Amino acid sequence: MPVVPVDLAGRPYEVRVAPGLLADVGNQCAPLLRKAIVPVVTDANVQAAWGERIDASLRAAGFQPHWKVLPAGEATKSWPYLADVVDWLLALEIERKDHVLALGGGVIGDLVGFAASMLKRGCRFIQLPTTLLAQVDSSVGGKTAINTRAGKNLVGAFHQPALVLADPLALETLPRRELGAGYAEVVKYGLLGDGAFFAWCENHGPALMDGDQALREQAIAASVAAKARIVAEDEFETTGLRALLNLGHTFGHALEAETGFSDRLLHGEGVALGMVLAARYSARRGLIDPAEAERVAAHLRAVGLRTELHELGLTADGAGLVAHMLHDKKMDSGTLPFILLRDIGEAYLARDVALEDVAAFLDE
Ligand code: NAD
Ligand code: ZN
Image (cartoon, rainbow, N blue to C red; front, side, top):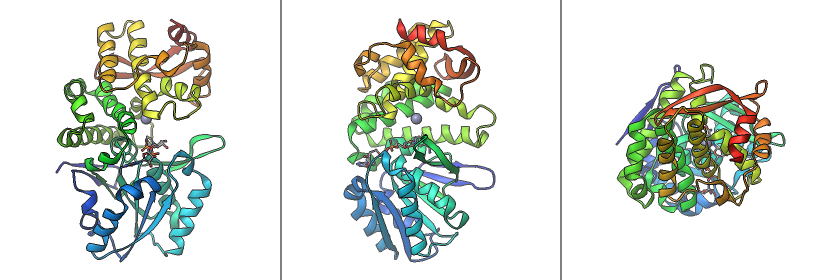
């Protein structure tokens, strides 16, 4: 079983990756759990798909799971549900050394991680990520957050989990669109720092999407290792290394905003198109061979992701998209920090990108 150690200042933990981990959650977590009561927070979809198996595994290992089942969807990452979870944990008399289990996608992971960060000034939590996006991205790195009226992820904490169990079998019940959105983040790790991994994706992505468990396990482990390496070197976003994880995200966020953060475009789908745009823009600036930029589009298209603006029903509107980017908090005197590509596997943070130039590119 691949075990990826995440080594953050003084708080190392493991990300275990293997099929069957979820059904074995009781045994996997037993060495960490101090008392019989185990709080498990999830959403209604995940509860329907996995609740019985997780409950049975915990009971078989001698624990008494207590369930908190929240509505599925981004709206759950909010003040009311944060308060709800914290009050519920307090009522269960959860202490600092106890562990809360977060079973679900990034919404549950972010919400429960944040609740754990504040319960008695910080209790422990275990991530049981059930989306590909959560397995390769949100469950690693320790960022937790909720959304507020002012925007997404603006209130939160850095709080590392005690353990992450990433089970590729969890993805068997995940809708294919969600799988594709998570896969875009897998491809991102190849593009930003590992050309050989991108080539691996080109060779194996379609079979992975079609259900090959061994390939899914390899992709998750490689992605976690890539993210773990980056966040270990830049835990609190001070050196700029962690910014590379935003490859495709400036364009992607603008597209998410343009489509109203709706079902028209999932986050990862926006990132896929955003990476294509970042690659093509890099080619326009003469940084990368245009043929290499088109490899990015070709691969994402091969796994069923959209790679052209018109596929979103959007007519190119550079000024409109750039206006969304201007809302980005990292804007600095007419330029935005963009992650561009010098090559496949070689991303860098460009600080000299003029917004008019990006608008002109989007209008072409
Ligand atoms: P999500 O948690 O909403 O899950 C997507 C959908 O899949 C939901 O409807 C959920 O109920 C369903 N689902 C989850 N697992 C399932 C399964 N195994 N079978 C069937 N259905 C299942 O979304 P997500 O894409 O996992 O996460 C998105 C969130 O993650 C966003 O809020 C984003 O801000 C956050 N995020 C956080 C970080 C971080 O570093 N903390 C990084 C990236 C994204
Ligand atoms: Zn993302």
